[in-house]
Length: 355
Image 1 (cartoon, one colour):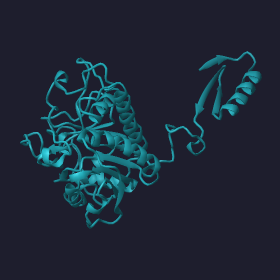
Image 2 (cartoon, helix red, strand yellow; image 1 turned 180 degrees about the vertical axis):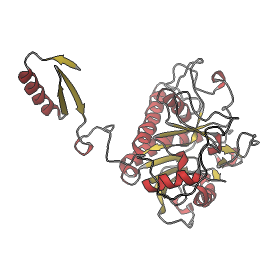
Image 3 (cartoon, one colour; image 1 turned 180 degrees about the horizontal axis):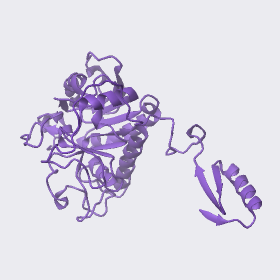
Image 4 (cartoon, one colour; image 1 turned 135 degrees about the vertical axis):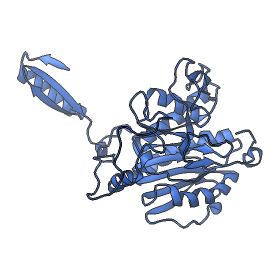
């Protein structure tokens, strides 16, 4: 705010005293007016969970080594069959919109610690081996990665050969009687574990579904403050056909005339603290719905889409970053990077159900 100086000394001394009491640092500028700018106290001294921690890893200057050889980028040639940018000017990533040589040279210098959170509850432990083995071949190769496996069957976690700087951390969670409870429980247990453990061990976090395998490069081109993946089933449809939650009673409600894209909850990622905020949001909103006697149409995916509508992702990943073996691959999907497996849902889910 700005205020004309009536008694500069009196105002500044009084305001500085108040600032000390409030634990806030203020900087004053004078050019005929007083302008006050405040900054949070350091997070180490602040008990607020949402206080930004500027010491955490961030995507910094896009530097790379000299003498690196790569194809010259063009201002005239590129993908013309798909849109590579959103209307809020965030990248929309497809094969052919980035150079992996350049991307890797830049991001490997930043050296983030990446967490991958997956849930393998009940019979879903059968998918761990394929996910981990293909992840080691294709997912952020040569980056530091920790797979956090949330499971009720620790003995079923397979031994998989991991690359340098990569490891597995097992988190025990209770079993569930409904697959919907497994889905909703992900947000609860992820919130608790990020808060107590993962935030001390990682800089970046992906939430992923375990019933998937990697088929191609899933690299640093996917990283941003908050990255969301277009759902394969709805990336060519109009917003009225999106399976948003349409019941106004739910906290996930989105009106028919609103919406950008429909995002999958099977793959999403971002800075650790941004993901913590989003995961906690999905958990808390689901809890409010439960108290009001309603469950969002697609559980945490509905709440995720509500959040991302009003808090835009800084990067949108094409359906290359989560396809499905159930669906034919169209011409605009040049690479399937990860895909959900065909399975008998009635057999693997505790209470059956469809995909």
